[in-house]
Image 1: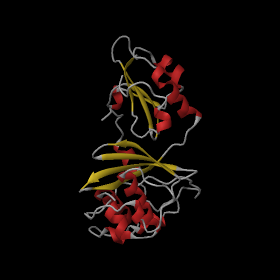
Image 2: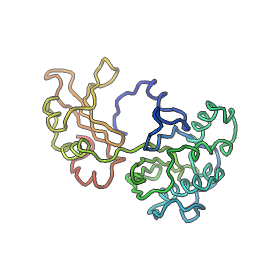
Image 3: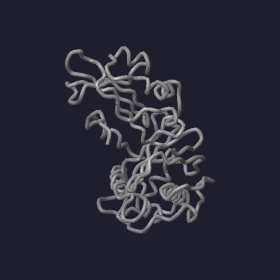
Image 4: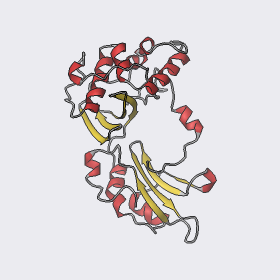
Length: 264
C-alpha cells in the first residue's frame, strides 16, 4: 500500500453526506461518492447477462466488471434484493446509517428496506458507456467507469466467493493540469527542491509537514490522481527524498505515459 497523507477525521466525516442530498444550487452533474455500504447476503453475484435491466451496452471483460454492471442493472430495475446481494457488507452498513439520518431505517433493518436511497438519487446513472479495469488482484478490483459527461472510480472486493461492490467515487475527467502531472511525473528526480518540482509539475495541490502529524511532502492530487514528493527533514531541507505515485485507479491511457515505477 502506498504511503498516504494523513486525513483529518473531520474530513472523513464530511465525506459521509446523505446520499439523497443535492448540491446547494441543485445543479450537481457528477455522481456523489457512496459511503461504504452493504448487507450480509452471501449469494453469489450474477453475471451482467443476468442483469434484468441491461445496464447500458457495455460488455464485461472480467468477473469484477460483470458484478458491477449487474449491480447497476439491479438499481435500474429497482431490484433491492439483487442489488443487496451484490454489494459489499461495508457498503450496506454505511447506507443504513444514511437511511437512519433521513428517517428511512432503524438499526438492524435489512438492506432491502433502504436500498431505494440509491436509485432515488437524482444524480444516479446506470448506463455506462465505458468500463476499464485498472487494477485486478485476487481480492481487489478497481474500475474506471464513464457515463459520458461524468465518470466514477469503483472498488470491488472478492468476498465470500463473489465480487462485491465496495465503493463508488466521482472520477476526475482529464484536464490540462492532470495531463501535465502525468506527462512530467517521470521527469522528477530525487534531490530536487520544491521549486524544481513545481517547475515541472505546476503548482502543488498542497503540502504537509511534521506539524501536521506526518512526513514532510508536497503533492499533486485530484481524485484518482495522486503524486507525492516526500521531502528531507535535514540539510539540504526541502529536497525530494522519495517520489510516490498511486497508479491503481489511472486509466490505461494515463499509464502508457508513465515509464517510471510508482516508488522511486
